[in-house]
Length: 393
Image 1 (spheres, helix red, strand yellow):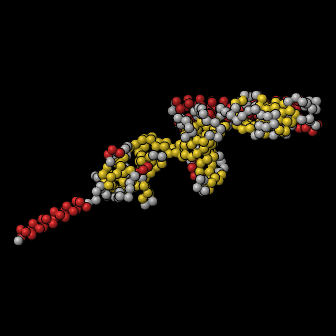
Image 2: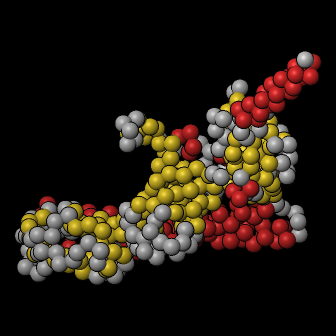
């Protein structure tokens, strides 16, 4: 009898053990990554567009009948090239006085442009001396890399200002020539000689306001020319991102259609914001950030769509964690660490935020493994099964 009871008890225990094994929760399959040291870049990215740094609006210099403009948008023009012809209308004494005043104003503008160009050249010469001095001090270990980079940026900016001042001077001289030509045509009070309207600089035609023949008044807009070699990038960032962007920061022009991204540098963060309605109908406060490419922009022209990625911070050899492993917990950040086949929740402190990795300031060590994309079935203490084929570093 006792033997039969022991047999029954043994059968019950074996059955209970079998049921426990059968209904025991299977380990949750997870993907893992190894915590390591590497590079982290904190960036902000937004859409932008290209524009030519120097735009010139060509206007009618005299009143008369404009002949049909044969140029088309996209055509290249040289400095001094005739872009339109105007058959002047008879002039009265008042109009002659206006032309003389315009000539005097053009001459004054030319003198001002020459003075600004001289000042820009002097500033550029000074920044070249400062750059040479900064390089010498850096070579002897007296100054920092940041001071040298600042001197390089200031020299590049001064060179750009000098080139812009030279273009403005050339444009002012052409305006003087146009005013002189207009006054010469009407030297005897009236003339049937056509007046040539010339391009102030070399560039490309961006827009023709109306190519048809028509009667125009002095100052009527005829066409717009852009100075092709100088392309700048304009991107509107949210104000909360723009406050962290500073002139001189590195930037990258992406998604512009070429096979290679274009490096650039932030030149200006405009001081005023504006309201823009997003695609979802939400009003946003945005700020224009102007970037200058530091590499050739072959293929880009005016008003082309691009993406602008500004590097706010770059770290090398920092302890980092994949973004897909981090989640919110009790108002902070946490991850699931692999501990002897089980998931263990670990709180951690995050530093800078990169696109793929975040900087870890405390809470993890190099070599530990964390769970990527933890699902609802992953909890603290649950058994897991690592997918070794998908483990990454």
